Image (cartoon, rainbow, N blue to C red; front, side):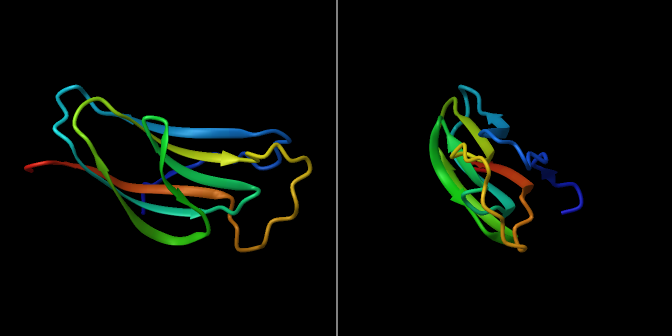
Length: 118
């Protein structure tokens, strides 16, 4: 998209580093569905993209070279949703060379939470 959020450039770190974009729902949240467009041009062991809900992995995306819709159910109440780009998560130094199709970044766009009954 034109105004996508992009993960930072963490390339070259000899240790594991990550960057999160976080959404927190409130107590009165009635539950619903989160949808987002994701382009995750990442490949292990270099990097990975994980969506966590309350610390539990809800989706993991690798080698997604076009914007793809991700849809996740969100139960009622308070929840922490982390969109997490992880680089060098195995603490490998040096990392093996990455294939040329890997851009080493994640783009997140059109994030929408539709509540139940809306």
